[in-house]
Structures are given as C-alpha cells and as structure tokens.
Image (cartoon, rainbow, N blue to C red; front, side):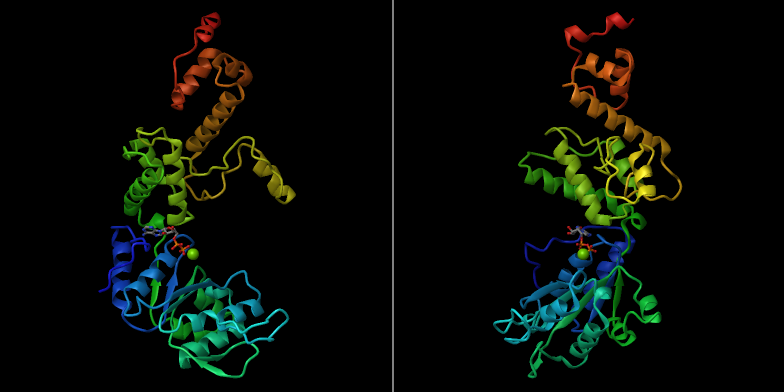
Length: 354
Ligand SMILES: Nc1ncnc2c1ncn2[C@@H]1O[C@H](COP(=O)(O)OP(=O)(O)O)[C@@H](O)[C@H]1O
Ligand SMILES: [Mg+2]
C-alpha cells in the first residue's frame, strides 16, 4: 500500500460509524470502479475522495477535482471535456479538460447533482466507454479515468422525479459510501477537536496545547454541528487563537455572528425583524428540541458584557453605568461569565454603591 503524501491529512475518528466508513474505503480503493460519496456538507467527502485515490494503484497519477455546482452548462462542459481552438468566442487555443488531464488517475466530481442533464449524459458515456469529444471538436478522445463523485442530495429521489439520470446513478452507485454526520458520531468530537487544537497551536507557534476545560468539552459535545467537521474545525481554531497562550481553552463561540448588535439588513422583512432581535436564534443552531434557552441567554449576556467593556475601555465603573447596572451587579455578571481579568482599579472599587 502506498504511503499517503504528507499533504493529505489522515482522517481522524474512532467511532464505529467512522471506522466502518474507513474500512469500506480501504476495500473499494483498489478497484477502478466509480464511487459515490454521500454526506452533508463538511462530513469529509473531499478528504475521503483523496484517500480513495491515494490508496489505489493510481496514487502516483493525477488526482483532479471539479465542482459541478455554480458553473453554467457550457462552462462545465468545457472544464470537463476541454475544447478545440475556435469552439466558442474567446477559445483561441485547444484546452484540455479535467477528464483528459486525469488520464490514468482519478477525477473527483463534487456536487454531481448540480450537473445539467446533458452533461450527465456525456459523463455517463465516459464512465461506460472512456470516450468523449472536446467541445467544438469531432475527434474521439479515449481516457482511463476513475470517477469519484460526491453529493449531499438524495440522488435516488432526484432520479425518481427526473432531474438526475437514473442510468448515471446506477453506474455511480457501484459503491456508495455514506458519511455519517458528526452529531451521529459524538465519540469523534473530542478527538477531532483535540487534533485541530494541536495543529492550530503549532500554526500560532505556541509551545503546547494545554487542553480544553470540562465546560468547553461540554459545549462542543452538546452542539449539533450542522456544518460537521468543517464547522468544528473553524470553531476550535477560533477558540484556540482567542485563548491566551498557555491557558486551557474554556470559551467556545459556536456562532461568531451572535451579537445583540447584529444588523438585520439583507433579509426579507419578516425574517429581518426576527434576526435583529436579541431573541432570534443564532444561525446554524438547529431548531429542534431541546432548545438551549439558558445557554443562549448566557451567550447574549456575555456578548453584551464584552461589547460594553470594549466600548468603555474596560473601565468597570463606566461599563456598569453604561449597562444600567450597579458596580456590584456588573462584577457578579463578569464573574459568572469568567470575564474578570484583573482586580478593580483603586478608583473603581465601587464602595460608593454600598
Ligand atoms: N475525519 C476527519 N478527520 C480530519 N479532518 C477532517 C475529517 N473529516 C473532515 N475533515 C476536515 O474537515 C474539512 C471539511 O472536509 P471536506 O472533505 O471538505 O468535507 P465535504 O467535502 O464533505 O464538505 C476539511 O478541512 C477536512 O480536512
Ligand atoms: Mg466539499
């Protein structure tokens, strides 16, 4: 088995669901058949596609990627199959497409459900016969490419309503690997978070990652992670860099947009009103029960306190007045949220409030 290049991150995880995916990938990697990876955003489809390639006999041949979403039909066609000189305005020279460039290697097609029907038809032909024509050309090009496709959609349902070709689905579905969402493999959260934190500590050129507090681990473990590993990575990287070097990571901000000052602009009127109010649920959090009322109110309180402290240059008496609190109420709020960073200045010891 070839060694995986250093630039290919090894997938991390130890939950039974994750381990069975890894076993399936090792089993299917050596075959030159198409693979379909199904999973929510951020579950690791691209990472697994790379693993399929690097564990295959094609590992030292090209591994190319293309996202089928967001390109017009003609652009997608040109990207996949290339074009001849003069095929369309601006096409001065012949350009090879991804299929030709990936010859003998692997092509990863992300968001395959977004490929228009005509493009799906051509892809099917390449999968079946290994042949196609460049856009604007009539020569048949023959290639040997292994296809790995990914989607977060229900392709059989799309095929049933006629927006995805059933024959292409049949070919792609030689082996289907479905990546479990992070919330269904909570055993992996801590080990992934630890891994990301250690990497981030290195990147920040800090000495050592001192670990997460129990409170931080609980926040990470309780959250639903709609953005899966990608979201976890962002949240942990942010938490590490916001923590003083040498301190344990305690404060986990899942949604960096949570703020009582969040502007309501850009949303349709009825949503805008809700989004502007401090009671609106922070984006990304699932609306399913249990609704973490206490946790969300605490987030809002902490955000208000931090913002007021900043606006008042951390002068606690002014901050208290700004918030309409007594000095002692403010101190107790700061303590509750772990925001006490220094003893009060002599001029703000608050005795006048007794
Ligand atoms: N099991 C895992 N171990 C380590 N990193 C992972 C794992 N799964 C996903 N990641 C990382 O999470 C991010 C999102 O993964 P990606 O493969 O792009 O997801 P998808 O293509 O499903 O949206 C990437 O930075 C990837 O390296
Ligand atoms: Mg992706």
